[in-house]
Length: 138
Image (cartoon, rainbow, N blue to C red):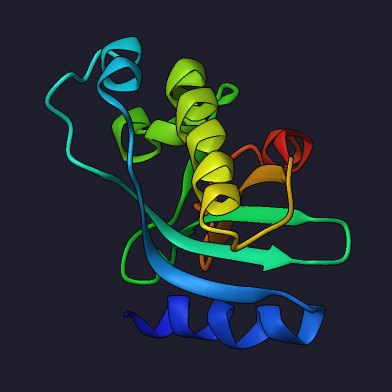
């Protein structure tokens, strides 16, 4: 686990969340076909956080980008889009987040019908990014 992800893991319990890193989401064959990836392995989420009060689940993608120009968000989209698949693919996002909630519920890691939200933890945003657009997205 990288230093940036470790920092996020350290901060979330202070807000009442338990965390699990590198969480594998087990998609069914039908779900894999729905997203157009029939041979896809398990989908991995960088960090899953759960807060019992409110039954909230956060699916967090961590992008430190400290050694690059940073996360680029231009023209209402992440660049390059293939690095942000859950954010740029609505069908993929819906299927993966729904399965994540069901998987956590089935394993009794959360209460029934959790609220699952996709989040992005960013260490560095590119200077050319549309910060207002990025803020509006979240």
